[in-house]
Length: 134
Ligand code: TYD
Image 1 (tube, rainbow, N blue to C red):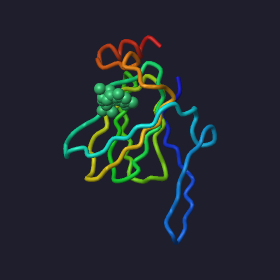
Image 2: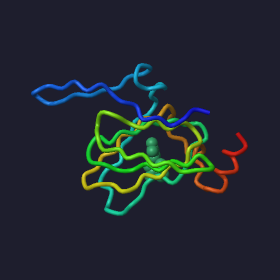
Image 3: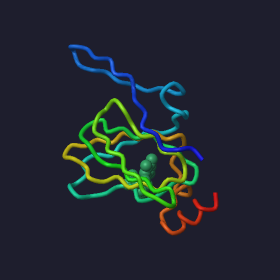
Image 4: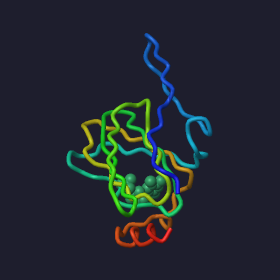
């Protein structure tokens, strides 16, 4: 099973403003099939609270900050994202919760799969069972 990983991205510092990027396979360990973003999250709200059977994702805080809490079926690890020049790679079969969004936080997410509700695991007990069978 792959492990979650913070991936540092190139940062081209320029007096006109900085520029960062990622491309596969150099910074990103998968080909991108879909991009979406989460924004306008009211204070105190959480996103996520599910796992994916197959899908892998890479999440960047393009603006503001938030925390991603990952559960691998036995323990939880928290990652704080607050810069636009690194992101979190999340392999398949990790339960994730996005929380503690700052005002104006913008989460950019890229995935290696098209949207498919059947790939979601939304029941934590089912997730733990499936994860521990792997
Ligand atoms: P969901 O993945 O549950 O949100 P969160 O990011 O908080 O985990 O998605 C919320 C809704 O948006 C759900 O009805 C499915 C829909 N959706 C799409 O139609 N396409 C997408 O690419 C995504 C990510 C969600």
